[in-house]
Length: 112
Image 1 (tube, one colour):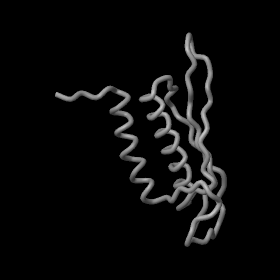
Image 2 (cartoon, helix red, strand yellow; image 1 turned 90 degrees about the vertical axis):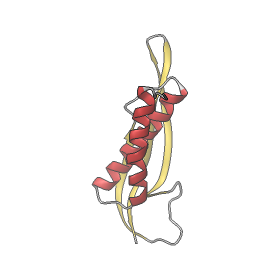
Image 3 (tube, rainbow, N blue to C red; image 1 turned 180 degrees about the vertical axis):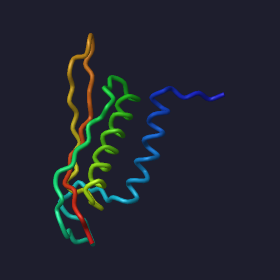
């Protein structure tokens, strides 16, 4: 029987929710979206991971959490797109080894 770790289960659950949000909200790293007009800029949105990562699996989960958090923020303020998306990590010492948290930031917009 195939068993998944807690991290893999959490990542699968959040990834499923993230995929749903990605169908509702466009995400781009540029400041415009080809073929779309920005009708209104709603503000800056950000997402910060809950997971402090020091392994690849944990980092993947942290990245998914942060992106989901940012898109949820955008949806809550009425955006249907996020432009200028950037990803960053913050690394700090936790006990005996460094760990990272992932941060996404972007501009929530309404496009038509």
